[in-house]
Length: 433
Image (cartoon, rainbow, N blue to C red; front, side, top):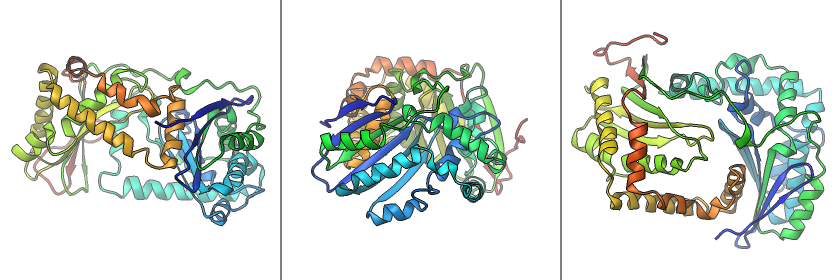
């Protein structure tokens, strides 16, 4: 059982405290409720760009990394479609200094320095290089840049966190990023968790001292993550298909379907469905399509797990000589079997047990608990850090079949087929046709 306390300051910032005396460290985790779904269609990639900018130093702390190193700590961050997260782990005695660093960044001190023209220019080049290295120059690197707009046509999930067009980042001005900061990097849009070897009363006092006095921008109202409204993505009423040729070692297939939101109780059913299909060598897809039929060299099913309706994806690399159409038909057959035949209770219990095991190990470190507390607080359900396995165990075989019938109905899939440039045997339709 992970014990914690919750607090909310007058400026809207939410704070969670968790004491763990088994470690000499403490983690300051700051989650901002802003991801790529909050970007304008003509200004994409800004949430990720800002993740880079927040390490650029401020007037008070010109070299953020040097301050962290001086404390013997480590820090990092990540951005996704729904939120941006920063964590800083330091010796427990350095908690106040860590809070001062994060408060200084949240307070916008970075944005008043003229030198940030240079910092912005540097980070734009860094992000552009990341775009080329991770997305354009890696085998299968542009998969999500193809799959997302194939699945989404209205919702901002249709672009990746790197952006819909790298020119949006390249052309960003200081006014652009300052407007983004003012709107989203504010205490009433932040959730902070302190986890580790701390005294809760002292940690609360320090957090209120350094974070409680920060003021959000006046005249800007920003709803909680669950209360925000984005263009609704209609259900797929007919199959979509995109075929491309790439310099990749093997043909690949991605079969995706829209699923429910993170707040829907059926989220847990979708997650268990993905595990029934591909979690381990005894799973259905591995046994039947990898081992028995030898259609795929690797095959996975997973959910994107986003706050708004996300994706249920089956993806795999084909064995040499297997046609893409045959491989996709085999996947469809397995999905239809789940829809038509009730899953065995023992099979369902097995994947629920696997989730609980993974869940427990994912909270092994205080830093993991800090992130978990922030994430579940964003969902409005911090108690899930202790009770989420119960939601999985409440799923029944009838629930699995009901959701499978809805999700795997014919004509509701978006299929991306990637053919290796070395494979001349299959016809290819150009992108956009």
